[in-house]
Image (cartoon, rainbow, N blue to C red):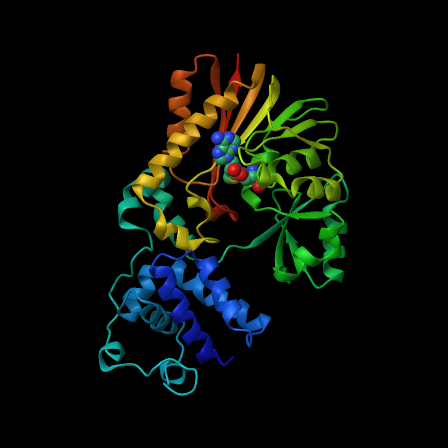
Amino acid sequence: MTPAARVAAAIGILDQVLAGSPAEQALLRWSRASRFAGSADRAALRDLVFGALRRRDSLAALGGALSGRGLMIGHARAEGLDLAAIFTGTGHAPAALTEAEASVSPPDTLPDDLPDWLRPAWTRALGPQAAAVATAMTARAPVWLRVNMARTDPDRAAARLAEEGIATTPDGTLPSALRVTAGERLVARSRAYEAGLVELQDLSPQRACAALDLAPGLRVLDYCAGGGGKALALAARQPGLRIAAHDAIPARMADLPARAARAGAAIRIDTRPQGPFDLVVADVPCSGSGTWRRTPDAKWRLDQAALDRVVALQAQILDRAAGLVGQGGRLAYMTCSLLEAENGGQIDAFLARSPDFRAGQRHLWTPLSGGDGFFLAELHRG
Ligand SMILES: C[S@@+](CC[C@H](N)C(=O)[O-])C[C@H]1O[C@@H](n2cnc3c(N)ncnc32)[C@H](O)[C@@H]1O
């Protein structure tokens, strides 16, 4: 596909997303209907679509319209591309610019690419960093790997990855973390990954798991285990943990036994955990506002009602998970959100209604420190 044909395809996909279709689904539909497209085309298209959604409002301002076409005109202007070479109206290229499109004058200040309704909560949560974090959310997220320290060390893992064309650089603050600088799309098919030497895991959840004190023999429950990212990270850090994994939708844990086997980790699936546990990790469903670099369409889909629903669900899960913590044990509450209602506000409300728990460490990581937005609160029982 020519660059102009890719832009034309991106316009169609963005129109579907703006009409309410999740971006992944719209991209998949396009791929299925476009057998002529190669993997380079699909990757380029994905970059165009996700890049435009991260900066939806500012590109619309530059392009003169909140439409697929407006966003792509805005993208071309933002990148300093030659509009006349893309919008030619010939072959598979998008139609030539109208006079009105050609004469759009960019505003003095571009929007911050946050939904209007959310800006007050964003500012409350992030204070003086609010604007910088909003800007950071408009960039593509790096790919992070967690070295399985139970199997190898970062230097050896990096060398094995390099043999397969995957370049990495250490994080510098967390020994297990490698940032992928080239060959990102090769990771999941690499021998190093297949052999369980590395896992795909963002830097911030790695930091959260590294912040928890562990000791051999500890009874640990990953209460919202999903694919098991947190259970695997804890198992890799501390041999001898007795780890159980639970999820309200057990099918979400379908890949966990294979992942655990690959990593050499012993993780038991437990669909009816009874407790008591020494450590219960509750990596709860959330707005995902910390991961909007990866799922930028979710930023525009979230509304107050959906946020209220997820906050209520988190409170319910917290209470259930707390009931599984033994005396002297801990609850580690985690979200990939930056919003106070899901983080500090949720924890303060829990502590107010749970006199047998007291506050422990709390951390909020933002993209300004390299990883996704992520929150950890540790709560001690007794
Ligand atoms: C943020 S995801 C977990 C991601 C996972 N910990 C990981 O690292 O890959 C939240 C999970 O909570 C699960 N969940 C939703 N409601 C739940 C509930 N009431 N009790 C337990 N798990 C629940 C969801 O099915 C989902 O898999």
